[in-house]
Image (cartoon, rainbow, N blue to C red; front, side, top):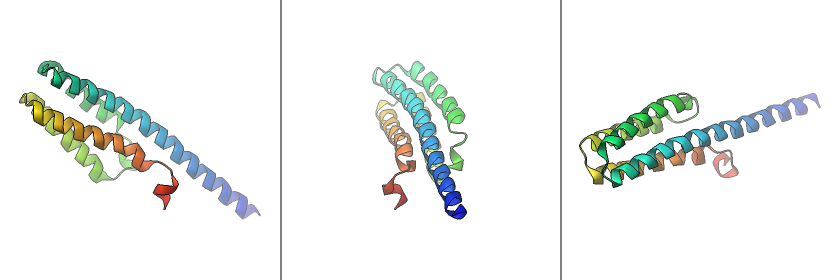
Length: 126
């Protein structure tokens, strides 16, 4: 009986930790997506100086918010996001609207996908 109770406590702790980390991921990604949306709006308006400044802000937010993500996520996925951030910065610096908007859309999708992929759900368990 003690073993069953101990296993139940461990199971509940793991599930609670999963939900807690998913909430943290959702909050972090929401902030990053907000940065991306602001950059996209500046690119649409061809306001390149503000877009470049906001891109620097996005990179700082990424470094701050995603510092603990490697403990949870695939490192390849993190690298892909960092590569996309680098490309976005260069496309905006070159004032290329088409490539900037395309890369921002890809970056948005990659970041939005993270909490969905890491969520505690029956689909992800099985």
